[in-house]
Amino acid sequence: MITSTELKKRVSYCYQCGTCSGCCPVSYTQEFSPRAIIYDLLNNPNPQEILKKNNLLVCLTCNYCLARCPQNVNFGEFIRQARTELFKEGFRVEETHDCFVSNVSNILAKSSVTPKFPKDYIPDNVQLATTGEIAYFPGCLAILGAYFDDIEMDFKGIVRNSILILDKLLEKPLVLLENAKCSGHDVLWQGDYETFKKLAEYNVNLFVDAGVKLVITSCAEDYRTLAVDYKELFGELPFDVMHITQFLAEQLDKGHLKFEGQVSENITYHDPCRLGRHMGEYDAPRKLLNAMEKVGVKFTEMERIRESSLCCGVSAFNYCNDFSKAIRIDRLKEAEQIADCLVTTCLKCQIHFNCTLTEKKSSELGRINVEVKDITTIIAKAMGVSE
Image (cartoon, rainbow, N blue to C red; front, side, top):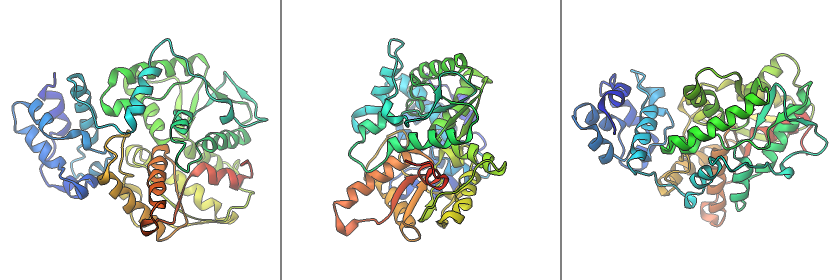
């Protein structure tokens, strides 16, 4: 049951200034007010009724409201906790793609299921290890690549380029745990905490048994999940977690990362919610993009960047509809005005943007002339290691 104490504690510092409701991307396209939800919750003796009445499931958990809140009220974390309680009572988010992600997560969470990473996602002539200190975590890239084969997105290339980049920089073979499972990000934010917990326990044991001291991921959601949510579940972990851009920015500072290829790209960068507002990482991707200007990258910023970056419109494959598409189209058109290529560091942002672009291509009237790529695609080319 939802108790008032813990949930009200999350939002008790709110003084009803309305900043959150004014900046919320969801409120641009439909009726949704974090301020009103908080007011009702704090002034009603039965919080359960308030949570059921207000559609907490449409929140993007993008943390835009947190970035603007003068009282530092973490509405996104409140939503996550509330969804966990609502899930126990049978409430479910409106999940798109026939509940593919939650179904796969529930299957993977079974102890009898051991996944095997597809060989064609692994570059030829690269020596990988099963034990060692530095591991690459591909997350759900291969699974999502198999499902979303109808959109123009190089899932396989993200993994292969990430491995090639790290292989070039590391003195010892990179660890790739081919039977790792999904991080559990989506089911966690849908409210299915028990499934998330099973996936997390499995992966943590896998990393520990392999002697891993540093886990590197190319997905912003996996980075946040491993670095924050796993730690919240287990306490201090025996390994560190980095997004690949953070690791590469460090290597650049040390003089180990060299850009020797040639890239002719007119690029702008989209800050993912999980890497940016959730984890506070804005500088590493920009440091890399600016450093690649000498090999042909022209990097231009959009107007809404860093803490003010616009969300891609969908979180955990929830509520992908005309409202969320309007948010994506707005962002893509902003990028189109200044660049030929929109680069980002989040797998989900790329899926949602590319899905929208695929739909728009069928209509010349609404066509948006911009490509969406993962930053590893650009970096691998600039390093001269891309296939």
